[in-house]
Length: 362
Image 1 (spheres, rainbow, N blue to C red):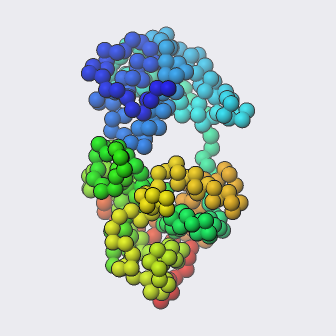
Image 2 (cartoon, helix red, strand yellow):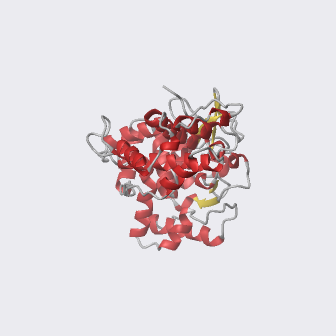
Image 3 (spheres, one colour):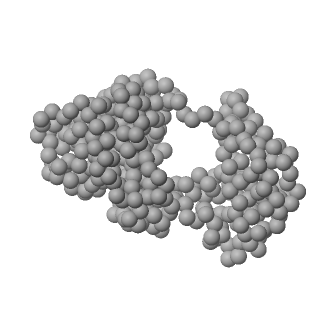
């Protein structure tokens, strides 16, 4: 099986173009100026896999002969049910494949490869149905049940991660981080083999007042931005405003919440580490472990850990938090990235916590 997420870089990739989709994809994945080279590692894996599907299914198709009918046939082919879709049409898959086909032709057009301009112009005029956005959430009762069950089976890190995701309304990646090739930009003392760990919450991000300050993973745009401390958006949370998180921290410190202070917690390193190896979780292993625990407490199988943020947002909105306050609390902003967070954002974050969890006990 071809491993399109790890391309071999050609000396002159343009010389490999032979009017086939396969050659175009090879150029997209290997050309030094391709947008693919600037993507973060996890995104490169997704792009490589999607581009690989194009090669697998239509790699020998001649670009110069492509018409609207050909693109429609491609879409219909990817839309059709297969052995993994249980008889259902693959709406999301087909839509995504057409998106990546567009990306390939745009780059070919920019390189002035023969036939790519005409193909790009045709596909840009076409629209393809997509699925509705996810409607599932992890609600407050499920969060508590998952935390309780995680502790019961000895997966305390899962309980801690769940509390952090729900309370702070952050993405999974902010909590558990990600493993990337050690050769990629970014410094980290946490390594395993040829990989290193970055992006996730670290103990040194908690100050003596129990404030957690963290650069949001979603705001770090591109492969090189990881290594630039001035890139991305920073948020601050006052952890005492989040009783479930304080409960988990107290368990880690081995003291009652009332006696929890910063010095009783680890000084440095990843905050969430797996029990089986004392290293940060790998995403797929984390998701699978979370799913087993969620299944044990009756959480429907279509609900995923990544739905925690949506559940927390829904909880806050149901309790009366307005949309603008939610926007600030979630860290949403304009496309340009910045390390400057406003006092209004900090207050909004605290307001949301007090609406959801009540005022902290003195």
